[in-house]
Length: 295
Image (cartoon, rainbow, N blue to C red):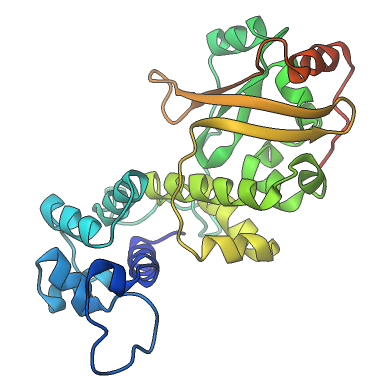
């Protein structure tokens, strides 16, 4: 599980280690710095709190941290909007069942709970966009819950995968075809990890998120390397390039829309510039049979 005590300590250490004291107007000090970045006492000074209190926060020994203190720490560490949200999430008190412990199954492992499902109305919306707009619905932990036919053809053969393997992070890091599909695979990997860490901040005890993270930590050195940077980056819109093996390069604009009536689900759409080669290739892709990439 992704316990808050571990997460908040690792996150704060990484963020203060990423800062340059000189850029913040801090003196180098008489003694040479043993590690890069800010010292705890410097963060405490910038945040206007005691060194002892900041140390307890970083060690996960401060049970209740006010919003004003979190904001002060965020300002001291120059956190981005997404990083501030993540800090607030992992600093919040954890919700436990009435007996004080996490729900577990017969073997003592956390109960997975029911898999998220997509309402029929959302599936009809996906299908209505099928001839021109690849689209899918993502759930907690970057699970791919639903898609239209064109959405399935821009990448992996989603219908052929077991439900628990239909996951963006698992596919990007564990499927050999992912590196050929994404010309700038490293940037895609960083984006995925940033999104997954943001998810873990919102739902630190969610069994599915923990399952995905733990599997990737165990089986992907690249994931471990990027995960340890503690980067938080929610990429909800932008442009991406895919190298499809049958129709060639696809340059797509994507947008993510949170489904307010369906907790923790997002509709993701992909569009091409009108009259562009990608628009023509999407039409070609729609006329093809099943996708050719498999896990």
